[in-house]
Image 1 (cartoon, rainbow, N blue to C red):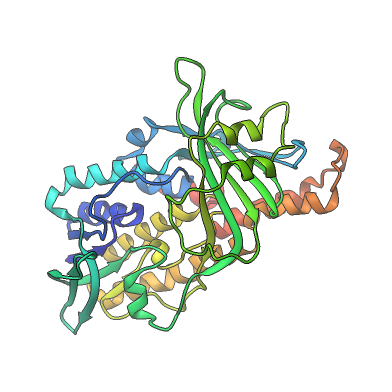
Image 2 (image 1 turned 90 degrees about the vertical axis):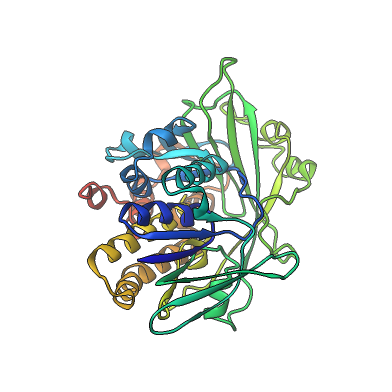
Length: 410
């Protein structure tokens, strides 16, 4: 089957590799002139690492990543109230990885070029629109700067993996409007510094009004330092800052002042922010879940289908679960409409649950639970372990990585 993939991000490139492995003819069209390693840190959870492992990529990913050992939660005073092992340390068959988003992006790009061929990825091809009939779908591409038509491509299926501002989604849902802004801004940076805790830990600190997420994304170097990724989530209220942009810089001094009191015996947060070469601001936004993604020979995948708040380390992971599901549907069916009907049936409700759960704070609900119960701090015997465990276990089930279900898969 011949397939057009619109979008050369993590979801689109993983899909190209997965469908090529099954013998399909794939072509990726990317709007930007050159795919570059953008972004900062990212987490790959065991359920998506399983998919990448089956594509032969686990060892290559591990070369430039941290295998996350545990996840810990702290209040704004640096007091720990929750800790759990992660990935293989928790008994999963697959690891959890923390790494630079640019590393996984370029690894996938290089793999597509090597395994399928350089002509597979067409850069500087911005989708103008598509048409379809009973026999095929036709995609029309332009140069985004000039608006000049440069190419048209015919195929059996078109998959929009072109992000939260998807052109494909816009054509399918022309009256949907802009993304839904949460009034939260995520400030992100990376800092070379001495490792904290055991050097492979991921930490969540504070509450949903003011939070800090911090974890290493590269191994410790010869000087005993490593690259730490951090994200400061601040409830900013109404703002004109609503468009996602990985490269928009923020006021670093203002952010340091917001976190000036967050100095713990295990982590100096203001010093970490100050040590970053740059701080980037990223509005937390999503879209309301759709009732269906597929229309005829066209469907959606990843952020184009289900953009979500970056909570619970599930954005890229859910895109890769889409890839796995769509590939399986294509193994089991030959008819395009049957394939996409099955894909919608499985993934639309599953992804919608994660979107809504993330809006409702996801696993980070336990930050607010503890902040509300103990605004001035707590003693060890006051921690409601059972209530916290219920929140964490429920999120794993909603997001598709509860250990009992996942470990039964190959």
